Image 1 (cartoon, rainbow, N blue to C red):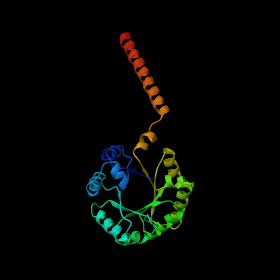
Image 2: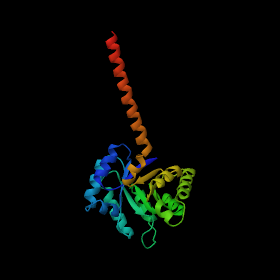
Image 3: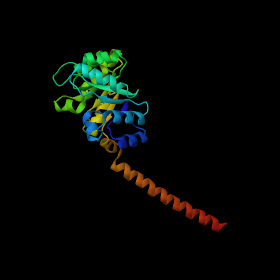
Length: 233
């Protein structure tokens, strides 16, 4: 399983890259705005460069198929590791499957996003999406079990040997991350604020503190023993 960082913050990206846990980055217009990236192309090109060959997802901003295709083709030219995010339907409920299929035929990697169901997932995979992004938090908001959706999609993809991979997003808690990992997500895209919560633990701190105290005592005893031995000789 891989971990993507759901952020456009350069400082967060560089920090968690340095920790060795980031395998890619996902963004959307809301994330770009929150992280004060106001020039989409400039921001995307810079992030794509600093993350090396890891994938960077950048989302189209139109309801119209022709404009989605135009934006996607433009984004793909910014860097070789750009993955274009295409919503599974637009805000009017109109299919984006044809856009996904066309981009697949053109060799452009697609992250089919805003997916909330098993049925949407299998259609996106059949249309040629590289990734199907299941929004776990929003699935739960509707009273459904995101773990069940993730698990069923993973089993279906494996059964038919399809190449599409599941990205789980819309992470609201550390438990969402754990549940997605256990359900079989290929990728979980995690907002930066959850990494420290995943990492830190009160009793780990206390355990390390005790180890250090015991080590200091041991070193003191070794020093006393050496002094006594030197005096005896």
